[in-house]
Image 1 (cartoon, rainbow over the protein chains, first blue to last red):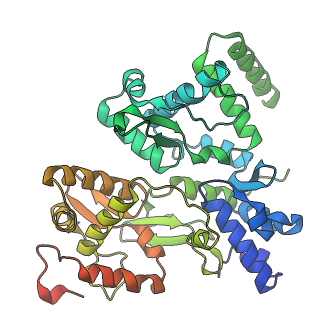
Image 2 (image 1 turned 120 degrees about the vertical axis):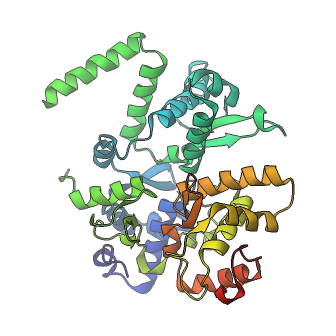
Image 3 (image 1 turned 45 degrees about the horizontal axis):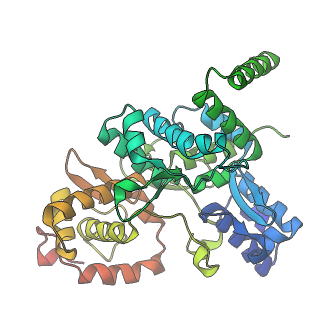
Length: 216
Length: 179
């Protein structure tokens, strides 16, 4: 029994309860968004609301990634609070490497018109050699960062051929788990990182200053 | 939108912090499982109705991909063989083992160039430590079972015990110590 979820699960019969638990475990643990056709508790709106409330107890929310696929992620307010907490932030070397991967595998292909929609998944790997050259990290720091990012599902390694060095890194499966607002925020951060002097970056900074004043 | 529930935030934070330990006296957010040794505690997920992520298999849904899954399993098995000496007990908290012993057991169950195997094994042990399956202190040369092994259900332990009994024992073990 789970003291936390019990009050939400208690009203349901065994069958429904098992469906709710299966959907909850699936969205939380699957690598990719899961199809609702396989999970009655994702397909039926009333049950889906219960799954959403189960997730909400741990600061998570349901995310629809395509017309009939679901995954889970941190809700926006929880994400903001966690991002402000130094214990939850990635080490600076990991963030640097992740940013490079996103610039090479998403921002550049998108600027070239190769990636059209706002997906954070990309078939264009950032070459390891490029990460070595640009990251300003020692080899062992870079390897440590890539190891942690891979373990966290934030990057994935892609082999281009039989040779390990010929491949590179693309954004990992965790990028499915971004809410609409998180995707927008990441898009803006990437513009600030890749083109800090661009008019778009200036507009983002101006708008954020405005919002900051508005909140204060 | 309602106010941010501090308990929900605390559980989310524990999830992000993941394999990192906190001081043993710090409380674990309600609804999470507290796993502790003398000095440290970990807040781990408590799943409903005895479900585990293995439920994904029933639905033929892929879990999060693991780097080098086969080699990682062998490295974990070598470490458990050394840290989980009394097999009738549970794997957690287990006993501290020397990294050298773990590498020796690992070398005995794998094939290939000794130096290369050793380097790969250390990489696998680091990944297992990053994710809480092992506790690894490379400077001190010490390996222990990780807090996540406390999540293994009793019924899943029998095949694991049988597997470990078939593996070569760690070098220092006397026959009397075998569980």
